[in-house]
Image (cartoon, rainbow, N blue to C red; front, side, top):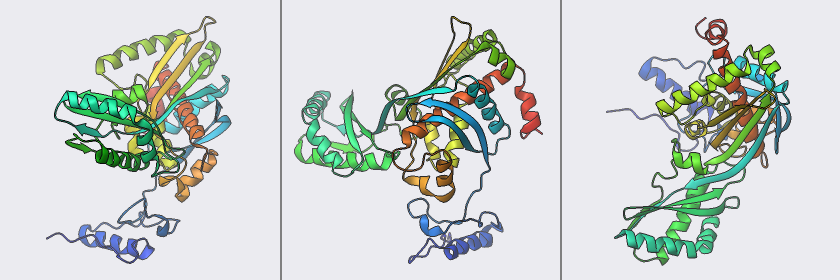
Length: 388
Protein backbone atom coordinates (compact mmCIF):
# COMPACT_ATOMS: atom_id res chain seq x y z
CA UNK A 1 0.00 0.00 0.00
CA UNK A 2 1.35 3.42 -0.96
CA UNK A 3 2.14 5.93 1.76
CA UNK A 4 0.43 9.25 1.19
CA UNK A 5 2.42 12.45 0.94
CA UNK A 6 2.01 14.18 4.32
CA UNK A 7 -0.25 17.23 4.56
CA UNK A 8 -1.19 19.53 7.40
CA UNK A 9 -4.97 20.01 7.39
CA UNK A 10 -4.82 23.14 9.57
CA UNK A 11 -2.06 25.00 7.69
CA UNK A 12 -0.16 23.28 4.91
CA UNK A 13 1.75 26.37 3.79
CA UNK A 14 4.47 26.60 6.44
CA UNK A 15 8.21 25.97 6.53
CA UNK A 16 7.54 23.11 8.92
CA UNK A 17 5.06 21.41 6.58
CA UNK A 18 7.53 21.71 3.71
CA UNK A 19 10.28 20.21 5.86
CA UNK A 20 8.05 17.28 6.84
CA UNK A 21 7.55 16.49 3.15
CA UNK A 22 11.28 16.78 2.40
CA UNK A 23 11.96 14.33 5.21
CA UNK A 24 9.29 12.07 3.73
CA UNK A 25 11.18 12.21 0.42
CA UNK A 26 14.44 11.32 2.18
CA UNK A 27 12.82 8.38 3.96
CA UNK A 28 11.33 6.98 0.75
CA UNK A 29 14.03 7.77 -1.81
CA UNK A 30 17.23 8.57 0.14
CA UNK A 31 17.39 11.89 -1.73
CA UNK A 32 18.39 14.91 0.35
CA UNK A 33 16.71 18.06 -0.93
CA UNK A 34 19.23 20.46 0.56
CA UNK A 35 19.08 23.10 -2.19
CA UNK A 36 15.39 22.57 -2.94
CA UNK A 37 14.67 23.44 0.68
CA UNK A 38 16.37 26.84 0.55
CA UNK A 39 14.08 29.72 -0.37
CA UNK A 40 13.72 33.39 0.53
CA UNK A 41 9.94 33.77 0.99
CA UNK A 42 7.39 32.42 3.44
CA UNK A 43 5.20 29.58 2.13
CA UNK A 44 2.07 31.39 3.36
CA UNK A 45 2.03 33.36 0.07
CA UNK A 46 1.64 30.20 -2.01
CA UNK A 47 -2.03 29.12 -1.79
CA UNK A 48 -3.37 29.16 -5.32
CA UNK A 49 0.07 28.59 -6.81
CA UNK A 50 1.18 25.15 -5.60
CA UNK A 51 0.14 22.10 -3.57
CA UNK A 52 2.32 19.77 -1.46
CA UNK A 53 5.03 22.45 -1.39
CA UNK A 54 8.56 21.16 -0.64
CA UNK A 55 10.79 23.98 -1.89
CA UNK A 56 11.95 25.69 -5.05
CA UNK A 57 13.65 24.92 -8.34
CA UNK A 58 16.35 27.54 -8.74
CA UNK A 59 16.89 28.45 -12.39
CA UNK A 60 19.76 30.82 -13.23
CA UNK A 61 18.65 34.20 -14.59
CA UNK A 62 20.80 36.13 -17.04
CA UNK A 63 20.35 39.70 -18.25
CA UNK A 64 20.23 40.76 -21.90
CA UNK A 65 20.06 44.27 -23.27
CA UNK A 66 19.60 47.04 -23.73
CA UNK A 67 16.62 46.23 -25.91
CA UNK A 68 15.30 49.28 -27.75
CA UNK A 69 11.54 49.06 -28.30
CA UNK A 70 9.34 51.48 -30.23
CA UNK A 71 5.95 50.19 -29.17
CA UNK A 72 2.53 51.56 -28.45
CA UNK A 73 2.94 50.50 -24.81
CA UNK A 74 6.65 49.67 -24.43
CA UNK A 75 8.82 52.64 -25.25
CA UNK A 76 12.55 53.00 -24.71
CA UNK A 77 15.35 50.72 -23.52
CA UNK A 78 14.80 47.58 -21.44
CA UNK A 79 17.05 45.04 -19.77
CA UNK A 80 15.47 41.61 -20.15
CA UNK A 81 15.71 38.82 -17.53
CA UNK A 82 16.05 35.35 -19.09
CA UNK A 83 15.83 32.24 -16.88
CA UNK A 84 17.55 29.29 -18.54
CA UNK A 85 20.11 26.53 -18.13
CA UNK A 86 21.10 26.66 -21.81
CA UNK A 87 24.51 28.21 -22.25
CA UNK A 88 24.80 30.68 -25.17
CA UNK A 89 21.11 31.60 -25.07
CA UNK A 90 21.48 34.87 -23.15
CA UNK A 91 24.55 35.81 -25.17
CA UNK A 92 22.66 35.17 -28.40
CA UNK A 93 19.71 37.35 -27.42
CA UNK A 94 22.10 40.00 -26.16
CA UNK A 95 23.84 40.00 -29.54
CA UNK A 96 20.54 40.43 -31.37
CA UNK A 97 19.57 43.28 -29.07
CA UNK A 98 22.87 45.01 -29.84
CA UNK A 99 22.16 44.80 -33.57
CA UNK A 100 18.63 46.17 -33.17
CA UNK A 101 19.67 48.92 -30.74
CA UNK A 102 22.05 50.18 -33.39
CA UNK A 103 19.33 49.93 -36.04
CA UNK A 104 16.65 52.20 -34.53
CA UNK A 105 15.15 49.42 -32.40
CA UNK A 106 12.17 47.12 -32.76
CA UNK A 107 8.71 48.45 -33.58
CA UNK A 108 5.94 46.48 -31.86
CA UNK A 109 2.17 46.45 -32.27
CA UNK A 110 -0.51 44.54 -30.36
CA UNK A 111 -3.14 43.86 -33.02
CA UNK A 112 -5.58 41.58 -31.20
CA UNK A 113 -6.51 40.44 -27.68
CA UNK A 114 -8.76 37.48 -26.80
CA UNK A 115 -8.91 34.52 -24.42
CA UNK A 116 -11.26 31.63 -25.08
CA UNK A 117 -13.32 28.85 -23.69
CA UNK A 118 -15.07 26.70 -26.29
CA UNK A 119 -17.98 24.56 -25.08
CA UNK A 120 -19.48 21.84 -27.26
CA UNK A 121 -23.28 21.53 -27.50
CA UNK A 122 -24.86 18.29 -28.75
CA UNK A 123 -28.25 18.00 -30.50
CA UNK A 124 -30.38 15.34 -32.19
CA UNK A 125 -29.33 16.55 -35.63
CA UNK A 126 -27.28 19.12 -37.50
CA UNK A 127 -30.52 21.01 -38.26
CA UNK A 128 -31.23 21.38 -34.53
CA UNK A 129 -27.67 22.57 -33.97
CA UNK A 130 -28.14 25.17 -36.70
CA UNK A 131 -31.33 26.47 -35.05
CA UNK A 132 -29.48 26.79 -31.78
CA UNK A 133 -26.74 28.78 -33.52
CA UNK A 134 -29.32 31.25 -34.80
CA UNK A 135 -30.74 31.58 -31.29
CA UNK A 136 -27.26 32.28 -29.86
CA UNK A 137 -26.77 35.13 -32.33
CA UNK A 138 -30.12 36.70 -31.44
CA UNK A 139 -29.52 36.36 -27.69
CA UNK A 140 -25.89 37.42 -27.52
CA UNK A 141 -26.61 40.41 -25.26
CA UNK A 142 -28.20 38.26 -22.57
CA UNK A 143 -25.51 35.58 -22.85
CA UNK A 144 -22.90 38.32 -22.42
CA UNK A 145 -24.72 39.61 -19.33
CA UNK A 146 -24.63 36.21 -17.61
CA UNK A 147 -21.02 35.55 -18.58
CA UNK A 148 -19.81 38.89 -17.26
CA UNK A 149 -21.73 38.51 -13.99
CA UNK A 150 -18.86 36.35 -12.70
CA UNK A 151 -16.03 38.83 -13.30
CA UNK A 152 -15.31 42.51 -12.92
CA UNK A 153 -12.53 42.34 -15.51
CA UNK A 154 -13.49 39.88 -18.22
CA UNK A 155 -15.57 41.14 -21.15
CA UNK A 156 -17.24 38.84 -23.67
CA UNK A 157 -16.23 40.18 -27.05
CA UNK A 158 -18.02 37.76 -29.37
CA UNK A 159 -18.97 34.10 -29.85
CA UNK A 160 -17.69 32.25 -32.92
CA UNK A 161 -19.63 29.22 -34.16
CA UNK A 162 -18.15 26.03 -35.62
CA UNK A 163 -20.71 23.35 -36.56
CA UNK A 164 -19.72 19.72 -37.17
CA UNK A 165 -22.04 16.68 -37.39
CA UNK A 166 -24.73 17.26 -34.71
CA UNK A 167 -22.35 19.36 -32.60
CA UNK A 168 -22.04 23.10 -32.35
CA UNK A 169 -18.79 24.40 -30.91
CA UNK A 170 -19.10 27.91 -29.50
CA UNK A 171 -15.83 29.78 -29.12
CA UNK A 172 -16.36 32.45 -26.45
CA UNK A 173 -13.83 35.26 -26.94
CA UNK A 174 -13.09 37.44 -23.89
CA UNK A 175 -10.72 40.24 -23.05
CA UNK A 176 -9.23 39.63 -19.60
CA UNK A 177 -7.38 42.77 -18.55
CA UNK A 178 -3.89 42.11 -17.20
CA UNK A 179 -4.55 38.47 -16.31
CA UNK A 180 -3.91 35.57 -18.68
CA UNK A 181 -7.50 34.69 -17.89
CA UNK A 182 -8.01 30.97 -18.60
CA UNK A 183 -9.73 30.33 -15.27
CA UNK A 184 -11.61 33.63 -15.50
CA UNK A 185 -13.12 32.80 -18.88
CA UNK A 186 -13.84 29.23 -17.82
CA UNK A 187 -15.97 30.44 -14.92
CA UNK A 188 -17.68 33.09 -17.05
CA UNK A 189 -18.44 30.68 -19.89
CA UNK A 190 -19.87 28.12 -17.47
CA UNK A 191 -22.23 30.73 -16.04
CA UNK A 192 -23.41 31.62 -19.53
CA UNK A 193 -23.85 28.00 -20.61
CA UNK A 194 -25.66 27.00 -17.44
CA UNK A 195 -28.13 29.81 -18.10
CA UNK A 196 -28.50 28.78 -21.75
CA UNK A 197 -29.41 25.24 -20.67
CA UNK A 198 -32.21 26.56 -18.45
CA UNK A 199 -33.90 28.54 -21.23
CA UNK A 200 -33.17 26.66 -24.46
CA UNK A 201 -34.90 23.31 -24.93
CA UNK A 202 -33.47 20.59 -27.15
CA UNK A 203 -29.87 20.49 -25.96
CA UNK A 204 -28.96 16.84 -25.34
CA UNK A 205 -25.85 17.79 -23.39
CA UNK A 206 -22.95 20.18 -23.33
CA UNK A 207 -19.40 20.11 -22.05
CA UNK A 208 -17.59 23.24 -20.98
CA UNK A 209 -14.57 22.63 -23.20
CA UNK A 210 -14.69 20.78 -26.49
CA UNK A 211 -10.98 21.25 -27.29
CA UNK A 212 -11.72 24.08 -29.71
CA UNK A 213 -10.04 26.68 -27.54
CA UNK A 214 -7.01 24.38 -27.75
CA UNK A 215 -5.76 25.25 -24.29
CA UNK A 216 -2.00 24.61 -24.05
CA UNK A 217 -1.86 23.10 -27.51
CA UNK A 218 -0.74 24.59 -30.79
CA UNK A 219 -3.53 24.91 -33.36
CA UNK A 220 -4.41 26.66 -36.58
CA UNK A 221 -7.53 28.17 -35.03
CA UNK A 222 -5.36 30.07 -32.55
CA UNK A 223 -2.81 31.00 -35.20
CA UNK A 224 -5.57 32.55 -37.31
CA UNK A 225 -7.88 33.88 -34.58
CA UNK A 226 -5.60 34.68 -31.61
CA UNK A 227 -5.39 33.26 -28.11
CA UNK A 228 -3.95 35.80 -25.70
CA UNK A 229 -2.28 38.66 -27.54
CA UNK A 230 -1.42 38.84 -31.22
CA UNK A 231 1.76 40.90 -31.45
CA UNK A 232 3.87 41.95 -34.41
CA UNK A 233 7.53 42.94 -33.98
CA UNK A 234 9.36 44.42 -36.97
CA UNK A 235 12.61 46.15 -37.82
CA UNK A 236 14.68 47.33 -40.75
CA UNK A 237 18.41 46.64 -40.45
CA UNK A 238 20.96 48.30 -42.67
CA UNK A 239 23.23 46.17 -44.82
CA UNK A 240 26.19 47.87 -43.13
CA UNK A 241 25.08 46.87 -39.61
CA UNK A 242 24.42 43.29 -40.65
CA UNK A 243 27.92 43.06 -42.07
CA UNK A 244 29.78 44.78 -39.24
CA UNK A 245 27.94 43.20 -36.29
CA UNK A 246 26.63 39.87 -37.60
CA UNK A 247 29.21 39.21 -40.36
CA UNK A 248 26.64 38.40 -43.04
CA UNK A 249 25.27 40.17 -46.10
CA UNK A 250 21.63 40.99 -46.76
CA UNK A 251 21.64 38.56 -49.67
CA UNK A 252 23.01 35.73 -47.54
CA UNK A 253 20.44 36.09 -44.79
CA UNK A 254 17.58 36.44 -47.28
CA UNK A 255 18.63 33.34 -49.20
CA UNK A 256 18.88 31.42 -45.92
CA UNK A 257 15.39 32.61 -44.98
CA UNK A 258 14.00 31.17 -48.24
CA UNK A 259 15.69 27.82 -47.59
CA UNK A 260 14.36 27.72 -44.02
CA UNK A 261 10.89 28.64 -45.24
CA UNK A 262 10.82 25.70 -47.62
CA UNK A 263 12.31 23.32 -45.07
CA UNK A 264 9.76 24.32 -42.47
CA UNK A 265 6.92 23.84 -44.95
CA UNK A 266 8.14 20.34 -45.78
CA UNK A 267 8.43 19.51 -42.08
CA UNK A 268 4.94 20.84 -41.29
CA UNK A 269 6.00 23.28 -38.58
CA UNK A 270 3.78 25.79 -36.79
CA UNK A 271 6.58 28.35 -36.88
CA UNK A 272 8.72 29.31 -39.85
CA UNK A 273 11.25 31.04 -37.60
CA UNK A 274 14.20 29.61 -35.71
CA UNK A 275 13.55 29.38 -31.97
CA UNK A 276 10.95 31.73 -30.53
CA UNK A 277 10.24 29.19 -27.78
CA UNK A 278 13.71 29.83 -26.32
CA UNK A 279 13.23 33.50 -25.49
CA UNK A 280 9.56 33.12 -24.58
CA UNK A 281 10.22 30.24 -22.18
CA UNK A 282 13.14 32.02 -20.54
CA UNK A 283 11.04 35.16 -20.00
CA UNK A 284 8.05 33.12 -18.82
CA UNK A 285 10.09 31.35 -16.13
CA UNK A 286 11.72 34.58 -14.96
CA UNK A 287 8.47 36.58 -14.93
CA UNK A 288 6.00 34.16 -13.38
CA UNK A 289 4.03 33.15 -16.47
CA UNK A 290 2.30 29.79 -16.95
CA UNK A 291 5.14 28.08 -18.80
CA UNK A 292 2.85 25.46 -20.39
CA UNK A 293 1.40 28.30 -22.46
CA UNK A 294 4.58 28.21 -24.53
CA UNK A 295 2.71 25.51 -26.47
CA UNK A 296 0.52 28.21 -28.02
CA UNK A 297 2.79 31.20 -27.54
CA UNK A 298 5.73 29.84 -29.53
CA UNK A 299 3.79 29.76 -32.80
CA UNK A 300 5.12 32.47 -35.10
CA UNK A 301 5.04 33.74 -38.67
CA UNK A 302 8.33 35.24 -39.86
CA UNK A 303 8.54 37.46 -42.91
CA UNK A 304 11.55 39.12 -44.53
CA UNK A 305 12.39 41.16 -47.59
CA UNK A 306 15.21 43.17 -49.10
CA UNK A 307 14.15 46.80 -49.27
CA UNK A 308 14.59 49.00 -52.33
CA UNK A 309 17.52 50.67 -50.58
CA UNK A 310 19.22 47.30 -50.08
CA UNK A 311 18.51 46.96 -46.37
CA UNK A 312 16.80 44.05 -44.60
CA UNK A 313 13.20 44.22 -43.36
CA UNK A 314 12.35 41.51 -40.83
CA UNK A 315 9.18 40.82 -38.85
CA UNK A 316 7.77 38.24 -36.45
CA UNK A 317 4.03 37.85 -35.92
CA UNK A 318 3.19 36.00 -32.69
CA UNK A 319 -0.51 35.12 -32.96
CA UNK A 320 -1.20 33.60 -29.53
CA UNK A 321 1.08 35.07 -26.88
CA UNK A 322 -0.47 34.32 -23.48
CA UNK A 323 0.97 36.65 -20.85
CA UNK A 324 -0.03 38.28 -17.58
CA UNK A 325 1.27 41.02 -15.31
CA UNK A 326 -1.31 40.45 -12.59
CA UNK A 327 -2.43 37.26 -10.81
CA UNK A 328 -1.09 33.74 -11.09
CA UNK A 329 2.64 33.49 -10.50
CA UNK A 330 3.37 37.14 -11.27
CA UNK A 331 3.13 38.18 -7.62
CA UNK A 332 5.66 35.70 -6.27
CA UNK A 333 8.79 37.45 -5.00
CA UNK A 334 11.44 36.71 -7.66
CA UNK A 335 8.94 36.78 -10.49
CA UNK A 336 7.60 40.12 -9.34
CA UNK A 337 11.14 41.52 -9.19
CA UNK A 338 11.76 40.49 -12.80
CA UNK A 339 8.51 42.11 -13.95
CA UNK A 340 9.39 45.25 -11.98
CA UNK A 341 12.80 45.26 -13.68
CA UNK A 342 10.89 45.67 -16.96
CA UNK A 343 8.39 48.14 -15.49
CA UNK A 344 5.67 45.57 -16.16
CA UNK A 345 4.30 44.46 -12.81
CA UNK A 346 0.64 45.05 -11.98
CA UNK A 347 -2.42 46.43 -13.67
CA UNK A 348 -2.28 48.21 -16.99
CA UNK A 349 1.04 46.63 -18.02
CA UNK A 350 0.20 43.44 -19.90
CA UNK A 351 0.38 44.87 -23.43
CA UNK A 352 3.69 46.52 -22.59
CA UNK A 353 5.01 43.16 -21.46
CA UNK A 354 3.67 41.46 -24.60
CA UNK A 355 5.53 43.97 -26.77
CA UNK A 356 8.79 43.41 -24.89
CA UNK A 357 8.44 39.63 -25.29
CA UNK A 358 7.81 39.99 -29.02
CA UNK A 359 10.76 42.35 -29.46
CA UNK A 360 12.98 39.90 -27.61
CA UNK A 361 11.84 37.09 -29.90
CA UNK A 362 12.75 39.12 -32.98
CA UNK A 363 16.25 39.78 -31.63
CA UNK A 364 16.76 36.08 -30.97
CA UNK A 365 15.58 35.11 -34.45
CA UNK A 366 18.05 37.45 -36.11
CA UNK A 367 20.91 36.44 -33.84
CA UNK A 368 20.55 32.69 -34.37
CA UNK A 369 19.80 33.04 -38.06
CA UNK A 370 22.89 35.09 -38.75
CA UNK A 371 25.10 32.88 -36.53
CA UNK A 372 24.18 29.84 -38.64
CA UNK A 373 25.02 31.68 -41.87
CA UNK A 374 28.29 33.13 -40.53
CA UNK A 375 29.31 29.67 -39.31
CA UNK A 376 29.42 30.92 -35.72
CA UNK A 377 26.61 28.73 -34.36
CA UNK A 378 28.61 25.66 -33.33
CA UNK A 379 31.66 27.66 -32.25
CA UNK A 380 29.56 29.86 -29.94
CA UNK A 381 28.09 26.79 -28.25
CA UNK A 382 31.59 25.34 -27.89
CA UNK A 383 32.74 28.55 -26.19
CA UNK A 384 29.71 29.28 -24.01
CA UNK A 385 27.36 26.30 -24.05
CA UNK A 386 27.20 22.89 -22.49
CA UNK A 387 29.55 21.43 -25.13
CA UNK A 388 32.46 23.17 -23.43
